[in-house]
Length: 226
Image (cartoon, rainbow, N blue to C red; front, side, top):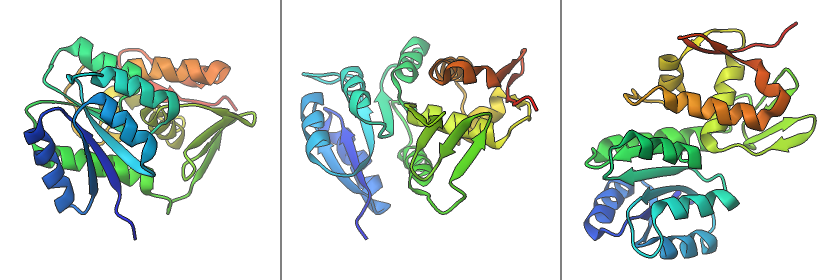
């Protein structure tokens, strides 16, 4: 069986080596890039890259530019690494479609845990793969969302969020519970992370976005009127 490919993009050789060593130990195949231009060349030429770990501050083409270009062509999961710790940078990353956001310095073991959590969800095709509610159909194995047979383009995290909502139809979900289940780790950032994703998700769902109800102060609920 072929190893899962991960692209690690960082202009610091020492950082790339640190991340690569931990991932290789877990059985992943790691491809390295030292700047954004090299990263995009590899991304276009290599087949089946399962995940991208991407630094923000890089020469030639920074992480934001790389992320924007990746999202124009692919929903491949992206984890952003950055020395910045400002909330506005984190929110920008989520607006652009990043799936996880890790500030340096970080624990390599935590990074690997998050990589494995994302890949478990993207690689797992064993469970029941089709969910349908309120005219929305999710095919989890194909990673496709349809409304009236029309495919709706969602980012990885938007897809996971909608899936979680639909699997918990009619249940009031707190922001904390959503973060812990959809992001799959204890998240200590601002709850606006969820609000940002819900806003974009509602927009992409059009009229069906109204099925995601806001519960004042608490969180959200996906509800289909009978």
